[in-house]
Length: 239
Ligand code: ADP
Ligand code: ADP
Image 1 (cartoon, rainbow, N blue to C red):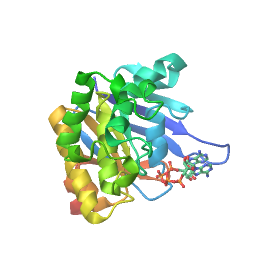
Image 2: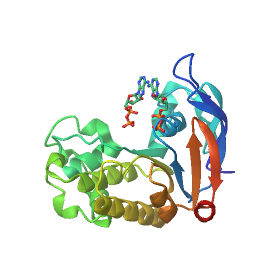
Image 3: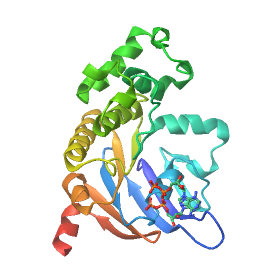
């Protein structure tokens, strides 16, 4: 059974426009898949259907054998633990430190106030440090997030997504606000750490070249429909 199955998925936010139309694809455990397409193609909406940030109007999303569209509210927390998110604008809590932001990913309820590190066990902190080390930012652990560069903040965002021990991570334009050098650092880290930890990755990108360099497979979206789904090498030959 595939980790993720999207079957005949349709989504509209209003009556006039269908943002996603009959979208079908599956993702296997361990795959690194990019979704490319121009702005407005429906890439973000697709990710939001997969983790049920929005309601699904037509078709099905099956994740880890669960029918995501029919999950009850109480089951959404578990779904969102199994599916980590990485955002274009990092979505960190600026007044918290790096380590607090990472721990927030797994133990959010404990970090409602500043200076709450004492509430975490050594094991929890070690786990956060392990990830920070993997991403090369452990030296910044006790800095406030708003003192870091964009690329460093995104590395914190990746650690926060990974500490919840997800099966899948969804990355919505993770490098769209970064310069080419930082983008490369982020994509290199994303690829190697998800590979090392055996985590499946679905990444929205608008740069075709980046998708080609890093993905096992590329899904092309245009006006809410899949126009390409295949090995990145095939896309290269077509051009
Ligand atoms: P992409 O990520 O490819 O840029 P989006 O999924 O963000 O595409 O948007 C697809 C279309 O859906 C766009 O036309 C956008 O304006 C519209 N849209 C996105 N979010 C909403 C929303 N919350 N309400 C209404 N329309 C939306
Ligand atoms: P980004 O491309 O960085 O995601 P957008 O401008 O597409 O930024 O969207 C910003 C926010 O506005 C998103 O949460 C999206 O859901 C919402 N949004 C986008 N298009 C529309 C729309 N046509 N109507 C209502 N909300 C929208």
